[in-house]
Structures are given as C-alpha cells and as structure tokens.
Length: 91
Image 1 (cartoon, rainbow, N blue to C red):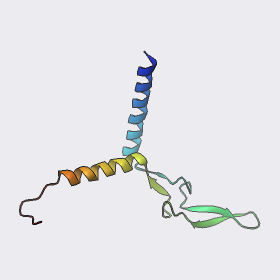
Image 2: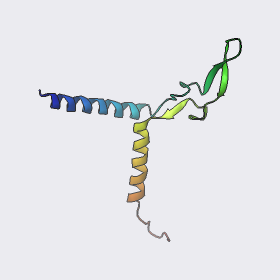
Image 3: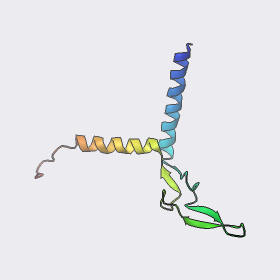
Image 4: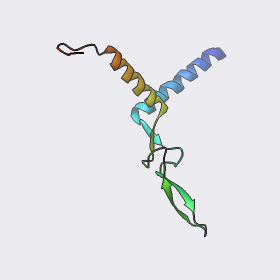
C-alpha cells in the first residue's frame, strides 16, 4: 500500500468516526468551563469557590460540536432551497 493511499484511508476513517460521534452525541463539554457551567476561582485563603457563569455556553456546560453545527447549517440551507411555493400560498 502506498503512503498516499494509506493517508487517504486513515483520513477517511477518522472522518467517518467523527461523523458517528456527532450523530450519537451532538453536544460536547464546553472547553472554557470544562462542562461545569461556571469558572472555578480561589478566594484569598486559597479555597476553591464558584465563579461567574460561563458566557460561552450560557451556564449549560455544553456546546454543539463543529461537525453537528456544519450539518445543521447545511440542512437549513437545503430545506430553504428545496421548499418551493406551496399551492395556494400568497407571496
């Protein structure tokens, strides 16, 4: 097997695995707050305490995966492009 064919097969396998992950679990943990929904901070004595709510995930602790976001965008554009005027609809 040539190196180019091996690289193509490997990239195809990685892509298919990522598609499967996006289909099975479209949401992942937020990278900023590690899925907690807020940032941890220390007080003056060094004890951990809850910080402010995470603005990136809006305190849910979850984010949509890039692959799922791209699929949702593609599906929205596809639906908008294939939906023609309905019978009896006025413009």
